[in-house]
Length: 429
Image 1 (tube, rainbow, N blue to C red):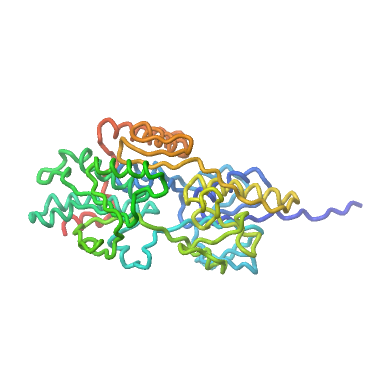
Image 2 (image 1 turned 180 degrees about the vertical axis):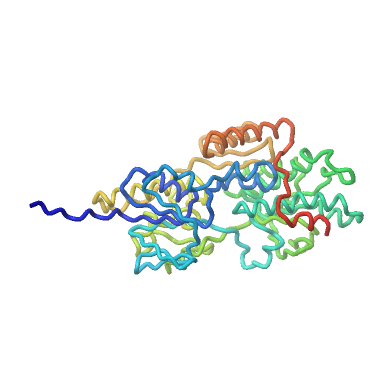
């Protein structure tokens, strides 16, 4: 008589967050016997590097976001859950959701991303929305387009000027890209669309508290970006952070600037993952992880992407960008595979920086790959090719490429839609 021993249950991996890091972890474990549960509070994966193009009417939401369940439909060992995580019970090894469910794990990956931060001034958010989600993008798009509509109906020149003034706070890649695109929108795309106003008279103002825009780039690239913005008609203010933000505009450097549309691109705040784990965190709330991306005192928990702060010998800290999150996802997957094979050696994460890219309007960009630096139109094409390459699906790559080509030739943007239901009321106010 043969006695059969019960089969060992599969290793339970729970991943919180369907961004670049979370999906890359799944992709590298899809052909294993691991039981994977991916939880996200939204049903879609978002290509955040192009989110500003939705906010400025260049692309449609469907061109930069894809349903997570559809992306993972062929992975038989993956379960996808739509839900909000509110905590982690590290003793019981369970993830706690908003609806009261406790999901057990053997290994946990927290890739919960970040939101915009207002440096202690959260009361500014209603007046200056940030840009991290599709909802943020459509809100900003509505405010930009509605401002032109209100200006068209405003008889008072002073108030009309307020509607035609757009302030972007923060001179990093997002702020620079938004400022340049709004300038293009006003001067090219909307040309001839209005009867009372001339959209080209719109004032686009970029305010950066530091000494230069694109501070992560070399000084010559930063200087070029500033000159390119000014060539587009953007006014750049450096060295004076915003001290007040309200319904009528902003204050900085002892001056007031009246504006009805303000966009925040100045800082980020990590998810509450550090509080869930009772782990040390930096000023932005990111978990200070070990060299192998595990949480302190919890080798079974990995923290990656914008949720973690990771030391990098070459650059100080690993930047919070998509390629870094993807590399971390690959590293975590390799470590999990090695552990399950009996190899418990600690493997420090090594970041390979591919380069820095930022676009300025529809015909200029800066790219710095270390061994080569490019500016202008060639850099813009390279920036575009790099982003198209990382998009998911042939249809989206073709759609985005055609949209950019059409905009480059004609200046027309097809996504100029005020879609939220309160838009008509705001125009009439």
